[in-house]
Image 1 (cartoon, rainbow, N blue to C red):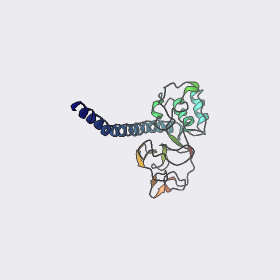
Image 2 (tube, rainbow, N blue to C red):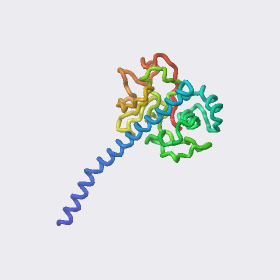
Image 3 (spheres, helix red, strand yellow):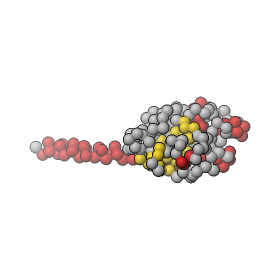
Image 4 (cartoon, rainbow, N blue to C red):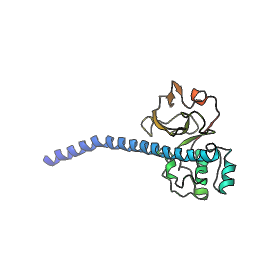
Length: 207
Protein backbone atom coordinates (compact mmCIF):
# COMPACT_ATOMS: atom_id res chain seq x y z
CA UNK A 1 0.00 0.00 0.00
CA UNK A 2 2.82 2.39 1.00
CA UNK A 3 4.64 1.75 -2.29
CA UNK A 4 1.45 2.40 -4.27
CA UNK A 5 0.79 5.71 -2.51
CA UNK A 6 4.41 6.79 -3.05
CA UNK A 7 4.15 6.01 -6.77
CA UNK A 8 0.94 8.04 -7.04
CA UNK A 9 2.55 10.99 -5.23
CA UNK A 10 5.56 10.88 -7.58
CA UNK A 11 3.26 10.90 -10.61
CA UNK A 12 1.27 13.82 -9.19
CA UNK A 13 4.43 15.79 -8.46
CA UNK A 14 5.75 15.14 -11.97
CA UNK A 15 2.44 16.29 -13.41
CA UNK A 16 2.58 19.49 -11.39
CA UNK A 17 6.20 20.28 -12.26
CA UNK A 18 6.04 19.51 -15.97
CA UNK A 19 4.12 22.68 -16.99
CA UNK A 20 6.65 24.71 -14.98
CA UNK A 21 9.50 23.11 -16.93
CA UNK A 22 7.80 23.85 -20.26
CA UNK A 23 7.07 27.42 -19.17
CA UNK A 24 10.68 27.93 -18.08
CA UNK A 25 11.91 26.57 -21.43
CA UNK A 26 9.69 28.97 -23.36
CA UNK A 27 10.78 31.91 -21.21
CA UNK A 28 14.38 30.88 -21.85
CA UNK A 29 13.79 30.95 -25.61
CA UNK A 30 12.35 34.45 -25.35
CA UNK A 31 15.26 35.62 -23.19
CA UNK A 32 17.70 34.20 -25.74
CA UNK A 33 15.89 36.00 -28.57
CA UNK A 34 16.06 39.31 -26.65
CA UNK A 35 19.77 38.85 -25.98
CA UNK A 36 20.48 37.94 -29.61
CA UNK A 37 18.45 40.90 -30.85
CA UNK A 38 20.67 43.23 -28.80
CA UNK A 39 23.79 41.72 -30.38
CA UNK A 40 22.29 42.13 -33.85
CA UNK A 41 21.53 45.74 -32.96
CA UNK A 42 25.14 46.44 -32.02
CA UNK A 43 26.41 44.92 -35.27
CA UNK A 44 23.87 46.93 -37.28
CA UNK A 45 24.90 50.12 -35.45
CA UNK A 46 28.55 49.53 -36.36
CA UNK A 47 27.60 48.77 -39.96
CA UNK A 48 25.57 51.99 -40.17
CA UNK A 49 28.50 53.97 -38.77
CA UNK A 50 30.76 52.64 -41.54
CA UNK A 51 28.38 52.55 -44.50
CA UNK A 52 25.95 55.35 -43.62
CA UNK A 53 22.91 53.08 -43.39
CA UNK A 54 21.88 49.61 -42.38
CA UNK A 55 22.38 46.72 -44.82
CA UNK A 56 20.15 47.01 -47.87
CA UNK A 57 20.41 46.41 -51.61
CA UNK A 58 22.44 49.61 -52.12
CA UNK A 59 25.19 48.57 -49.67
CA UNK A 60 25.92 45.23 -51.35
CA UNK A 61 28.37 46.65 -53.88
CA UNK A 62 30.09 48.79 -51.23
CA UNK A 63 30.59 45.78 -48.96
CA UNK A 64 31.97 43.68 -51.82
CA UNK A 65 34.37 46.44 -52.90
CA UNK A 66 35.61 47.07 -49.38
CA UNK A 67 35.91 43.47 -48.20
CA UNK A 68 36.32 41.38 -51.36
CA UNK A 69 33.84 38.98 -49.79
CA UNK A 70 32.50 36.12 -51.86
CA UNK A 71 29.49 35.52 -49.60
CA UNK A 72 26.03 35.41 -51.15
CA UNK A 73 24.84 38.96 -50.55
CA UNK A 74 21.36 38.74 -51.97
CA UNK A 75 18.29 40.83 -51.23
CA UNK A 76 15.35 38.48 -50.77
CA UNK A 77 15.66 37.28 -47.15
CA UNK A 78 16.92 38.43 -43.79
CA UNK A 79 19.71 35.84 -44.18
CA UNK A 80 20.87 37.78 -47.27
CA UNK A 81 21.08 41.13 -45.53
CA UNK A 82 22.56 39.78 -42.31
CA UNK A 83 25.36 38.20 -44.38
CA UNK A 84 26.58 41.74 -45.01
CA UNK A 85 27.34 41.94 -41.29
CA UNK A 86 29.42 38.77 -41.59
CA UNK A 87 31.14 39.91 -44.79
CA UNK A 88 32.01 43.26 -43.21
CA UNK A 89 33.48 41.52 -40.16
CA UNK A 90 30.93 43.06 -37.80
CA UNK A 91 30.42 39.59 -36.37
CA UNK A 92 32.16 36.25 -36.75
CA UNK A 93 29.40 34.21 -35.17
CA UNK A 94 26.08 33.06 -36.61
CA UNK A 95 24.62 32.28 -33.21
CA UNK A 96 23.28 35.75 -32.50
CA UNK A 97 20.90 35.47 -35.47
CA UNK A 98 19.09 32.52 -33.89
CA UNK A 99 15.58 32.60 -32.44
CA UNK A 100 13.73 29.44 -31.46
CA UNK A 101 10.93 29.61 -34.00
CA UNK A 102 9.44 27.00 -36.37
CA UNK A 103 11.95 26.00 -39.03
CA UNK A 104 14.97 27.47 -37.21
CA UNK A 105 17.85 25.54 -35.70
CA UNK A 106 21.06 26.34 -33.89
CA UNK A 107 23.76 27.68 -36.21
CA UNK A 108 26.93 25.69 -36.86
CA UNK A 109 29.06 28.88 -36.89
CA UNK A 110 30.57 28.04 -40.28
CA UNK A 111 30.69 31.41 -42.04
CA UNK A 112 32.50 30.68 -45.29
CA UNK A 113 31.05 30.42 -48.78
CA UNK A 114 27.57 28.97 -49.07
CA UNK A 115 27.65 27.87 -45.42
CA UNK A 116 27.26 31.40 -44.02
CA UNK A 117 23.79 31.84 -42.52
CA UNK A 118 22.23 28.87 -44.28
CA UNK A 119 18.51 28.19 -44.31
CA UNK A 120 17.26 27.75 -40.77
CA UNK A 121 20.15 29.60 -39.14
CA UNK A 122 18.30 32.92 -38.89
CA UNK A 123 15.21 33.47 -36.76
CA UNK A 124 14.69 37.20 -37.22
CA UNK A 125 12.85 39.09 -39.92
CA UNK A 126 14.50 42.32 -41.06
CA UNK A 127 13.25 45.72 -42.17
CA UNK A 128 15.54 46.79 -44.99
CA UNK A 129 16.01 50.37 -46.17
CA UNK A 130 16.44 52.17 -42.84
CA UNK A 131 19.25 54.19 -41.27
CA UNK A 132 20.09 55.38 -37.76
CA UNK A 133 18.98 58.89 -38.75
CA UNK A 134 15.34 57.81 -38.69
CA UNK A 135 12.87 57.76 -35.83
CA UNK A 136 14.61 55.79 -33.04
CA UNK A 137 11.35 53.95 -32.29
CA UNK A 138 11.30 52.24 -35.69
CA UNK A 139 11.74 48.45 -35.66
CA UNK A 140 14.82 46.99 -37.36
CA UNK A 141 14.47 43.28 -36.68
CA UNK A 142 11.56 41.30 -35.26
CA UNK A 143 10.58 37.75 -34.38
CA UNK A 144 8.57 35.49 -34.66
CA UNK A 145 6.84 36.63 -37.84
CA UNK A 146 4.79 34.22 -39.92
CA UNK A 147 6.67 34.02 -43.26
CA UNK A 148 5.19 36.14 -46.02
CA UNK A 149 3.00 38.17 -43.64
CA UNK A 150 3.19 40.99 -41.12
CA UNK A 151 1.55 38.75 -38.51
CA UNK A 152 3.40 37.33 -35.54
CA UNK A 153 3.16 33.72 -34.40
CA UNK A 154 2.02 33.76 -30.74
CA UNK A 155 3.26 30.24 -29.98
CA UNK A 156 7.08 30.47 -29.67
CA UNK A 157 7.25 33.15 -26.95
CA UNK A 158 3.94 32.78 -25.13
CA UNK A 159 2.09 35.47 -27.02
CA UNK A 160 5.00 37.92 -27.17
CA UNK A 161 7.00 39.38 -30.06
CA UNK A 162 10.63 40.49 -29.75
CA UNK A 163 11.23 43.89 -31.36
CA UNK A 164 14.67 45.43 -31.98
CA UNK A 165 14.45 49.19 -32.61
CA UNK A 166 16.81 51.71 -34.20
CA UNK A 167 17.84 53.01 -30.76
CA UNK A 168 19.03 49.44 -30.02
CA UNK A 169 16.33 48.92 -27.41
CA UNK A 170 14.66 45.53 -27.40
CA UNK A 171 11.10 44.96 -26.22
CA UNK A 172 8.88 41.94 -25.73
CA UNK A 173 5.44 43.16 -26.75
CA UNK A 174 2.09 41.34 -26.71
CA UNK A 175 0.65 39.93 -29.93
CA UNK A 176 -3.07 40.56 -30.36
CA UNK A 177 -5.64 38.04 -31.61
CA UNK A 178 -5.00 39.12 -35.21
CA UNK A 179 -1.27 38.44 -34.94
CA UNK A 180 -0.24 42.09 -34.77
CA UNK A 181 1.81 44.13 -32.30
CA UNK A 182 -0.17 47.26 -31.58
CA UNK A 183 1.54 50.53 -30.68
CA UNK A 184 -0.57 53.66 -30.15
CA UNK A 185 -3.59 51.69 -31.30
CA UNK A 186 -2.16 50.66 -34.69
CA UNK A 187 -0.29 47.73 -36.17
CA UNK A 188 3.40 48.59 -35.74
CA UNK A 189 4.28 46.98 -39.09
CA UNK A 190 1.63 48.91 -41.01
CA UNK A 191 3.55 51.28 -43.37
CA UNK A 192 0.94 53.90 -42.51
CA UNK A 193 1.83 53.87 -38.81
CA UNK A 194 3.06 57.34 -37.70
CA UNK A 195 6.36 55.85 -36.53
CA UNK A 196 7.41 55.46 -40.17
CA UNK A 197 6.73 59.03 -41.23
CA UNK A 198 6.12 57.86 -44.78
CA UNK A 199 9.63 56.39 -45.13
CA UNK A 200 9.91 53.40 -47.46
CA UNK A 201 11.18 50.08 -46.16
CA UNK A 202 10.99 46.42 -47.14
CA UNK A 203 10.14 43.54 -44.82
CA UNK A 204 12.06 40.32 -45.45
CA UNK A 205 11.76 37.01 -43.64
CA UNK A 206 14.28 34.27 -42.76
CA UNK A 207 14.99 31.43 -45.17
